[in-house]
Structure formats: structure tokens, C-alpha cells
Amino acid sequence: MAETVSPTRMNLLQRRNTLRVAVQGVDLLKRKRDALVADFFKIVREALAARERLTAAAREAYVFLSLAKAVEGKETLEAAAMTDRGEVLVDIELRNVWGTKIPEVGVRNVRRPLLQRGHNPTATSARTIESAAQFEELLAAILQVAATEIKLKKIGEEIKKTTRRVNALEQVVIPRIRGEIRYIAAVLEQRAREDVFRLKRIKKKLEAKERRAAPAANQARAGGP
Image 1 (cartoon, helix red, strand yellow):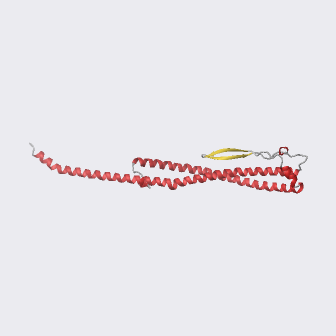
Image 2 (image 1 turned 180 degrees about the horizontal axis):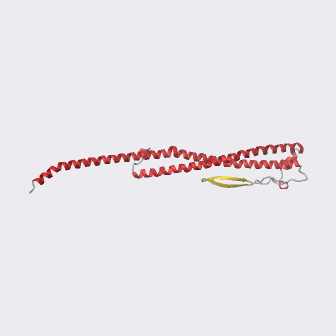
């Protein structure tokens, strides 16, 4: 409540400084939020493109898998799948957007040559090789979708947090400070009016006293030698 604030000029100056800082903070937070929102929609477009790529890659991969399974047999494909699977490596860097660390996930090329998969060129059919290649393409698409989803989640959370801070400042903190400023200013103004009124009363009393004292002083001067 504003009435709990001590109505002094020092507090009035402090509240005005606090209000100025809060207004500047709102402006900075809104600029940060605008930058994050622009980044968010940019990544949304990337995410949609990545999902389209994932859908197409999945469709192609399962078409080749079904064809290879029908011709080569389930056991042959399972044996090919048990060869060297290798490691899937990603590069993660942090990008600073208005003080927010946004993870940038760089997906390395996961499509490998035939020999790196551990397949025997003379014993592995072209359909099995192509099926493996298509699933490596599918893996790359999955990683790309994951990279964009991570960024979207991080930026979305930061936008929500920034919006809550803006709302708290605009709807709670700033109105409370302005209310305290109005209260202190009103009390100080009332005190100033009361001081002026008291000074006027004192002046009138002094003037009245001087008027009463004036005849006696005149008589004293008239009765002198």
C-alpha cells in the first residue's frame, strides 16, 4: 500500500529513479522479446522444412526397406544391420540473443560409404545397400528436426519468461511505484499548503501585534521632552 511509504522528499526522489529504471527495463525486455519472436518464427520455418524432409526421407526409406525385405529376406537384412553402426556426432554451440543462450546443433554428415558400414561389397545386394543409405538419410533428417525443436523450445520458454517479466513490471511494479509517487507528492503538497497557511497566520498575528503596539509607541514619543 502507498500509505505505508514514509512521505519524504528523499523517498520521492528514490521512487522517481526507480520508476525511470523500471520503464527502461520494460523497453529493453520488449526489445529482447521482439528479437526472440523474430528468431522464433525464422526457426519455425526451418522446423517445417525439416519435418517435410523427415516425412519424405521416412517414406523413401521404408519403401526401399520393404523392397529389400521382399527380395532379400528378413534374415539378410538383420545380418546387414548388425554390422558396424558407427557413432553419430553433432556439434553444439551457444548463440547469444539478448543474454539468452540459444543452442545451435550442427548435424554432421551421417551418410557413410559402403566400406565404412562394414558391408561386404561382394555379398551385399544393391537393394540392401540403398536401403541402408536411405535410413542414414532418415537419421540425418531426424537429427535436423531435433536441432530445430531444441531451439524452438528454448526460445519459446525465454519468450514466456520475458513476457511474464514485462507484464509484472507494467501491471504490478510500475503502477505501484506511480501510486507511491502520487501519495508522497500529495502529502508533501498538503504539508506545503499547511506551512504556507501557518506562515500567513503568524504574519497576521505579528501585524496585529504591531498595530496594537503602534499607538503606545506614538504616545510615548509624543510625551517625551
